[in-house]
Each structure stands twice: as structure tokens, then as C-alpha cells.
Image (cartoon, rainbow, N blue to C red; front, side, top):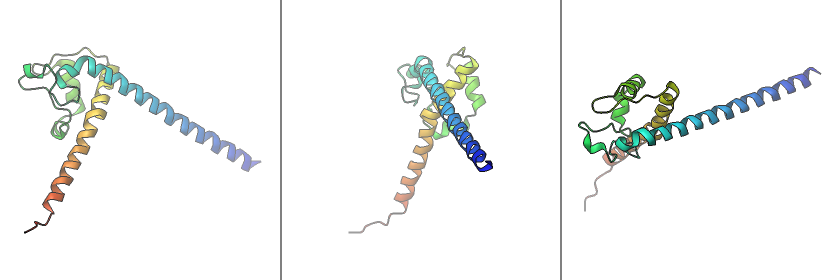
Length: 140
């Protein structure tokens, strides 16, 4: 009987772990989609569809809007700085009246959509530089 109870407990624990992973993924997907909607509505005009700071209104800003795909942007930026820029404005960028949930969502979106790609781009760029540096010149 103890073996049977152990099996039942193991199945229940397995089910709970799987269910919590599913719920967590669904919540993450909702946050991403909500942030994407907010970005398109409030940020894309200046920061651009690809987050490069080159949207249709970007030319009106000096300095230009931040390039979210730049590894340098992420290296010098903290979550608190992003909060302040969004909620209080920065330079010519206006402040946005986001709820705490909206702020979290848009930050999750720009991080996943642009930072993760900038990390990959940075690594890929460095790998390309390294591979080119390690080539033996061909003398003909």
C-alpha cells in the first residue's frame, strides 16, 4: 500500500509541476502580447518597429530615441532607468501614464523582443570578428 501511495503522490507532484509550468508560460505570453500592444501604440512611432530608434518620428529628436537592439544600450541601462524614462520622460521623450502592470509588460516586451536579439547579435558579431582574425591570409 505504501508503494501505491508513493506512486499517487509522485503523479500528483508531476501534474502540479507541469500545470504550474503551463500557467507560467501562459502568463508570460500574455505579458509579452500586452507589452507588444503598448509598444506599438506608444513607442513604435519613435523607437521604430524593430526597436532601432529609427521610427517615423525619430528625426524630430536630438538626441535620437534609444536603440533597443544595441548591446551598448543594455549595458548602460538599468530597469530603474527604463522606469524613469517611461514614467517621467527623458529629454524630448514625453512621460507615459502607465499602470505598474503596463510598465512591467512593455519592459518585458522590449527585453524579449530587442535585448535578447542584441545579446545574440553581439555574440554573433564577436564570433565573426574572431573568425576573421584567426584566418590565415592566402598569398597567391
